[in-house]
Amino acid sequence: MTIKILPAILANQIAAGEVVERPASVIKELVENSIDAGATDILIELDKGGHKRMLIRDNGKGIPKEELSLALSRHATSKIQDIDDLESITSLGFRGEALASISSVSRLTLTSKTADQTEAWQAHSEGRDMQIQLNPAAHPKGCSVEVLDLFFNTPARRKFLKAEKTEFQHIEEIIKRIALSHYEVAFTLKHNGRVVHRFPAVVEELKHKRIANVCGQGFVDTSIAIHGEFEGVVITGWCNAVGQGRRTNDLQYSFVNGRMMKDKVIIHAIRQAFEGMIDSQTYPSFVLFITMPPDELDINVHPAKHEVRFHKTRQVHDLIYKSISDALLLSASTSEIEFTQE
Ligand code: ADP
Ligand code: MG
Image (cartoon, rainbow, N blue to C red; front, top):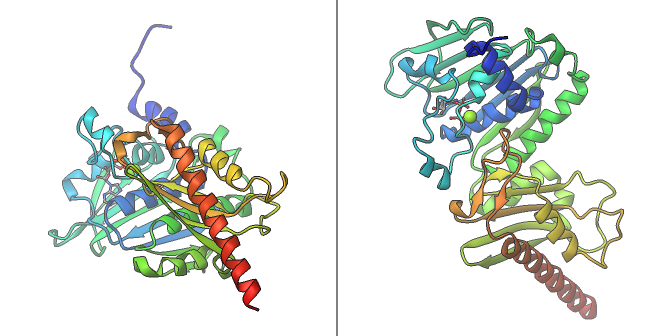
């Protein structure tokens, strides 16, 4: 075979293999786009676990008419301009790949209105030829993305979709994670016409209400607050107190600069803090927020951005360990005082 440049649609479908694994990855990318656009109210509507239809509607800043087609092209982003921007990134997206990838493996409709447009516009793509048609539409300020028939033109991938219930659970988990890190945004999740979750927006001081809404009041009632700070790195959150570990690791949430992460360094530090208090089959439950200067971590490790690399791994590890150990110690001593007072 001679060397040829791949047609755009094929290049996008190959990229989609990395970004779009299943309906939940579509939801993650689209909801993150809504948050990056400053939305305060996000509706997620699904039919059949997302296999059939996914709709994300937000009240963010929207996409101007003349940028609608561009938004669907690969490597088109409004979030970074040069390599230095990557060092200081604060938005959730930056690769400019999600919309191009998703639209190459689905029937996608993007509808939007910006504050200064009098009319909304709609771009539709059928995943085939990347020919995008623009039509006038009705929509309040913000953006809606509707994704129908995910993987309809990549049957090999479609085969790997799991049952409706399984795909729905993955989506529910993604929404919970995003809701935990963005309490200032209201989320509504509907499945097959029924509202499954409604997380109203809350102010910083009432953050625990969102945590209770997502993780259950039981978790909040039995948890202790974590706080630690060192050289610009701040750790906050909640973890369950001694003796209340779970048999499953389904209540372990960690975020770095508002981005959900499952990181070996974080898990290791937490386990170490709990050493001797829970056995190896028990998992501590926690919701942990780490904030640090953006130039002290690398988020461009994986296209789906699940992983980060800390530049000062040891320092972050030790700070997490210390913050949780301190919180556990404090809670042990206060419960002793309560005990003697009784
Ligand atoms: P990225 O998020 O990495 O920039 P995407 O392919 O996800 O790439 O989106 C491309 C661009 O489309 C974004 O940079 C943004 O300008 C615009 N965009 C996408 N979704 C929205 C949205 N919900 N509201 C406003 N603008 C959006
Ligand atoms: Mg994006």
